[in-house]
Image (cartoon, rainbow, N blue to C red; front, side, top):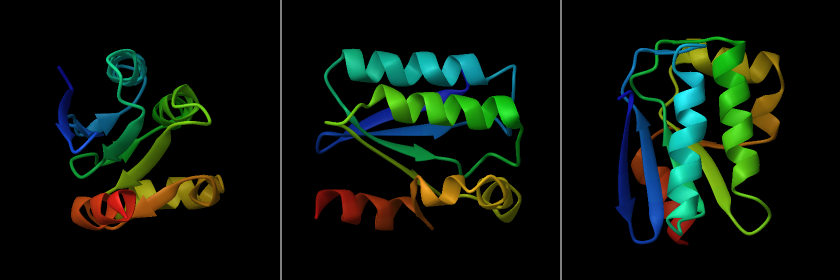
Length: 112
């Protein structure tokens, strides 16, 4: 499996354990997030610390995962490296998502 999920204080931290978030992993991300939501948690933090490469399929899966949370949920991203951050900036997705430099800061903001 390319993901680890930990529930902390009602927030699901979904960590990508694969080095690439591409077409081979993207469908699994959507499935993991969907399962988390089906289990009753709609506040999600996506941890991209281990992701060194992301393509359009990966970005699409992140957007689809965000949409799954709906209006009552929350979806934030943390721990992006510069290459992944550049993809979000080039596509202006950095304007759509709340992005935090690390999980601790993202978790604090979500709990505030």
